[in-house]
Length: 173
Image 1: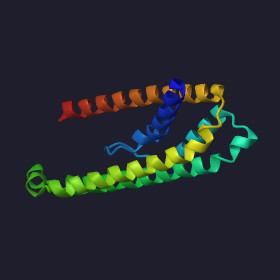
Image 2: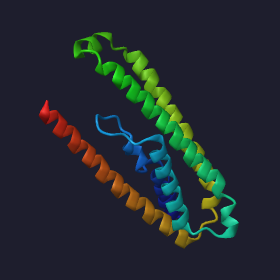
Image 3: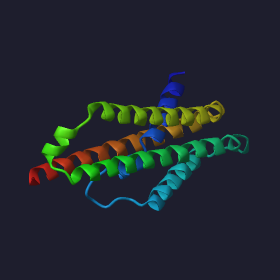
């Protein structure tokens, strides 16, 4: 039972914390295009499906999962684009102007809306996975958990890389 819980949790984390999650973070560096992000989502989906090696009976559950993953990715891209646009607006203003005109209530509303959207998307992904997960063999669940652990390590490395980039840019200023 514990393996099931761990595998389900890691699967959710895999979907939630995949490489596109940090690929579009606002920065001054080059950004991935929408087509690049779509290809990354395709690769992620194909990797999970290939890792699971679904049986013909299990395949019928896959379209709902793929749709939920794609919708979540599109919603995330829209949130990142909105945040980048907001950041670009603020960049044209001095720090004094930004601090003077800040609106913490509007910020809280934007943050709450983003969190609600993320939660809704994640719930849809979990709901889509549930019927398939109940049909997975212990071996499929182990492969899924191993893939999730690999992705978590990759995500941790990316976060560390991003942190070092910010430290380097702070040192230059």
